[in-house]
Image (cartoon, rainbow, N blue to C red; front, top):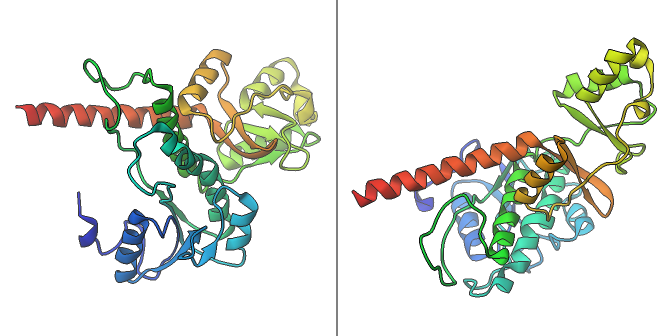
Length: 298
């Protein structure tokens, strides 16, 4: 691993790139600003502190979008926490958990509005710091500590949202034809669409499986409205839900797509593929940790 002080830049970034950095006034953020600025990047900080060029509370959507309005950035980086010192109690992490979920969603939306082509966030690192641990430590199984699971879950949702930062939330209106729906599914290479009359409300959800089932019974369904085949009872989640909870919900209810809402308004959609992808990444990371531990022990 390269030491940050020796980096001439970040992968995929040119020295003419403009960077919007959330958390620029924090200990880690100040170091990132220094390294990138020395390498020739144009770095703009966003946050509540006086040291930020753009002032906004990341947990307030309207403030974030208002602050970036009229600006263009090539890259958006989320390195914001609410930690002023190392956490020693679970409640010390609560505000940072919110930044990793609610604040993350607002930054993703801001990244789209400023035309960013890359979204960067810090990765998950597992550590066993504060708190006693009785017995052997294992990887993979959820912790019995609900507070710890909440912290880990917040980080996992943040990673899922970062992975989907460049994806537009596509919807279809209830009065569109099923033929139009099929065209949209093919165009965007997706398996389901949220049905919405205004682009923000969730009126229903419709998948390629719904089309196939109805087409088998009625060849004329392609000219029928989407409302005739959609599922009107839709299970949704929020950005503060954990990936583990979402995986359990999808398995139990046997569906593949869950819309993400904020204040009853659509802000995204998570698929079973997103959840599985992150679980596989978890397993790969755990395997690497165990392998390195074995090598170190021998």
